[in-house]
Amino acid sequence: MDSKNETTVPIYAKTSTMAKLIDRSPDWMEARIGTDFIEGVHFFQKSGGHRFWKIEAVMRWVESSDDPAVDEIVDKLIKGVA
Image 1 (cartoon, rainbow, N blue to C red):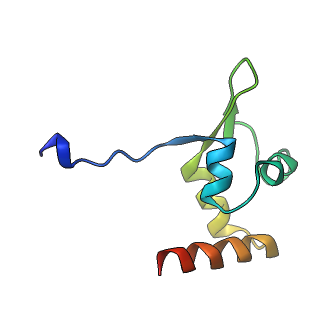
Image 2 (cartoon, one colour):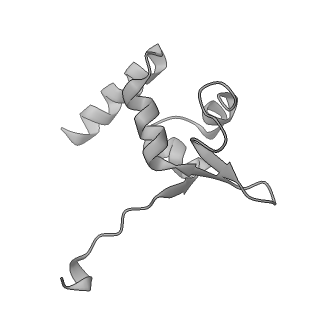
Image 3 (tube, rainbow, N blue to C red):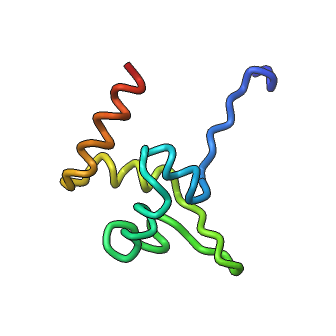
């Protein structure tokens, strides 16, 4: 396969990027740590305080959650794809 045509899909995202991916604010994400988002499952934290979100795990959470706020996220994601 020609490496010029390959697309790299990120595995991790910083909080600000992850928030943009699901159309939420970084504060919204931070407020749900320990309840909806669990360290070691949805993100990991390096020394220095930087959080790295596991994109696949957060998307699984979006797909399986019954939180009304998540319904809004899914609606916006669908509209963005359509």
